[in-house]
Length: 259
View 1 (cartoon, rainbow, N blue to C red):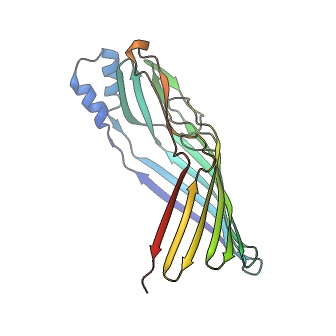
View 2 (tube, rainbow, N blue to C red):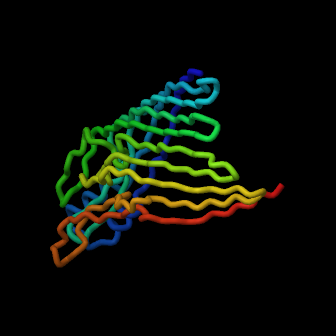
View 3 (tube, rainbow, N blue to C red):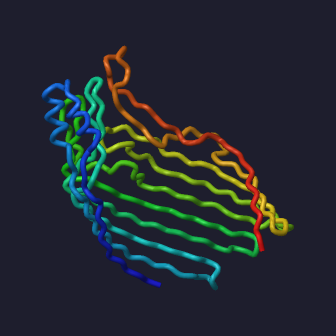
């Protein structure tokens, strides 16, 4: 089945409470106060989304497939900015003139045999932001034309589920993500990564048990990153601070189904 969709969305504007509180606290240099007072409010963002897709069952209904291509036209796009100069560190929302998101998503589930089921979910994304400036060490830096933050070019989840018989099933999957900017206000990036996950399930009457493990190869991967000066011994020189995803972890789930 082919389908087409056009939709419109809004994200309300508002007041930057953190910037307002800092500006009213006093004791700031005139340049800092002027900048914060220019960022006390942010405007409503509007989005116009166009989507064209295909979905259905194929190969004698053994393959479930969905393919979608989309384009998002974003006006007055709301982006997170930070004022970072010496010990002053203030977050705020600001508006860029516009931004564009274009992408393709593929979701598939294939019953290859009676016991083997394959799945693959893949996404590709291209983003851009226009007319956006941020404060870096007291200087305004133009970030126009750059990718939006937390918008990896690709991400995927592929794997298989195997019915082992006698109530047992094995699920193995690999998930991955391309590198991405941590923030719209600085140029620090994550690395790309791939994670291996697996689980073994057993069904016995109304009971469902599952032993699982995530990130089985114990990869170090960044999920968030910050860039600011926080150490007076280094005269508040900007440094990168990374938040990592969970390490290798195992667990057991048990579920009882009432009939």
